[in-house]
Image 1 (tube, rainbow, N blue to C red):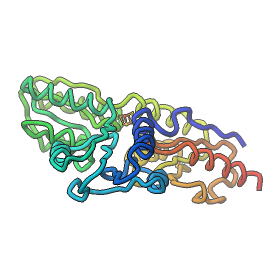
Image 2: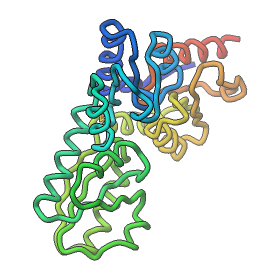
Image 3: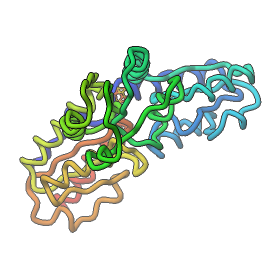
Length: 280
Ligand code: SF4
């Protein structure tokens, strides 16, 4: 059996940075240490942080004192204000690439463009970007949704950092029919694009594909959907123990990729489990 593991599988720069900041905080401020929402979209990693005393709170109001860590995809202006009002120590692990998307959103607004965000309206990253704007932005998840919007004189477009590049291109192409002037910034994170491109290449070469990552991880879900389109025997799993031996029967080339929040130890376990099952 040949096993191909994506080089880009696992923690991206922003998630690794957030994890490192959390681990450092656990050493320096071990009491009353919280993350606003799960630090990353991986239940096993969040459980590990819990063992170090880092508690997850879903609202700033529920953190009376101590230290709060902001996640890599950022927080809303309202949450930032509340944390300051409550005099919490703030550890801001917002990824610099997400901050870049904030910058371009504000830039487009300031220059008179109506803003369109390609992404999920209820994703914390998109909610946070909108919260810092003076005028609200429109959010679309697919080209169909664009038809109910506009037309615009001046349209500015950005994307949620983990969106699919092909969807971004499709929406940009469609927007040209609905706006006199379009200005866009490709705010999709390079690591997301590389991860998706590599997954496509591997899925083409194998006869079974494992996509590892939290079921609540949007970028892993997209990765799984991309792989499934190319290789129908693609499976989204969180842990090695979920692999069904039947999935590997008569499969001689197996590919592995993983979302941006998947720890390397889980990827290693999946790799070992596949080798074990193929030997059994
Ligand atoms: S996927 Fe990209 S933008 Fe998002 S946290 Fe990772 S490095 Fe930052």
